[in-house]
Amino acid sequence: MDISKKMKTRLIVYALISSLGFSFLVMSARSELSLPFPLSLIFENSVSGIGVPVYVLFQAIMMLFIVPHKKRMFFLVPIFIIALNSFISSNNIWYDSNIIICFALAGCMFFKFDFRNDSLSQFARMLSKIFSHFSHFSLPFRWLSEVGKGKSGLFKRLLLALVITIPCVVFLIFMLASADMVFSVKTEGFLSALSGIINFNTIIKLIIGSVAGLYLFGSACSAYCQDEVTLPDEKNPKCDLLIINIFLSALLFVYTLFVIIQFKYLFAGSTLPGNLTYTEYARKGFFELLALTAVNIIIIFITKRKTKNSSGKWAIFSTLLCTYLCAVTVVLLFSSFFRMYLYTEVDGLTRLRFFVMGFLVFELLGLIATFVYIIKPKFNIILIYTVVALLYYATLNVVPVDRIIAKNQIDKYLEGERDDLYYIFTLSADAAPAMEHLYNNTDDEALKSEIMYFLEDKTNCQNSSWQAYNLSIERARVIKNNLK
Image 1 (cartoon, rainbow, N blue to C red):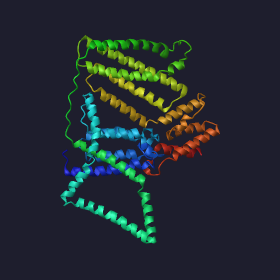
Image 2: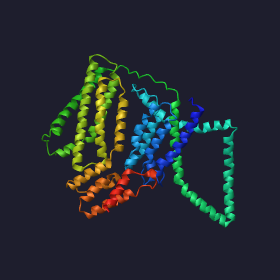
Image 3: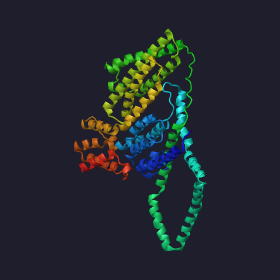
Image 4: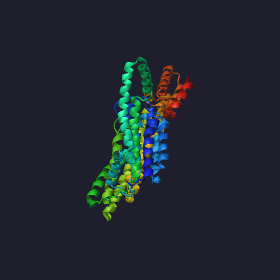
């Protein structure tokens, strides 16, 4: 790692600012401490706020001065989009996963990708790269030690002075406080004031911030590492196309029968056999079909990897079978979506149902890419799947999920299609606009009281610091005040 002395200084400053910034901007909104991990359980009864996207913007500004490959900073775009969730939404179900994904994206920011290589070995090297940044934690202290050596060991001498002085001063204060009551009262007052600033929560936040800052420091340092050796593509041994084609043909025969039934009974609405109702038929088997779509994609991926270097009529036949299997998977996907749509028409939306329907939409994008991959298996399909998955996750972070769900449930209630509204009171403050609509369109005083209690509870959870300012909670507070 060849880094100039000037750049080492910048990187050390970057590590320090990143550590303090994480504690001050990201962790400041987390108030009440309750061990152990995960992080969302450590700091309960609070939500993140505007400090999170502000921290990402600070990262972008600082990286302009420390990293050589500024084009790789495009990784900060999805990180910023995910970070916006902390400002625009009070739904904290993504808190843990957002931290993991954002740090994973930051960790592989300067990984030397071979975008044409879809081998699993590259994926394994990327994971190794993400975790390798922990090994750089000691670098800032080693660099500071080197500076100390250049100045006659000044750094070590100052450290030794602090080690000797601090315990002696503490012992002296203790003895004087025991000897004089006035000094004791003054000392206790000072310590009480100090404990209000530096308490257990603050120490924990500084520790977590230090780990975050040192990890980002390690990621920035990796930009100065020499290019990694790109491993050659995995050589696929010759496979028996006859066996593969028989296997695919058997699967597709069964799938063809299933597709015929789907078009006859589910999509066309033909009369169902026995006493089976149309709603019961549509609501069953959703998760099984969803699992089969994933299995089919894996089968297509493995088949094309094993046969992409093959030629001849059997190879062409294999490509046709994979194309048909992909088309069948699209039918399964539409069947799954239609079943879930009918399910929500009866019971209304929930978070899980909303996430699943969104997943099906983005899975369709993956299947379109799979069609292209079957015909031209030279591009990196794993990278495409990863991008689609990241787009799906980022979309869930910025879409007002709870507001959409609450509106759906409330509309059904007002139209007489639902008897209860228990689920909407388990949602976050994002549901406040829909609650306002319900409040203005019902004469049930008990229900109005529940709505006011909900708004009161959701608006009392915000930390008073500006870093914790949350747009969703502020909107709920305005709605609550207007309804009073």
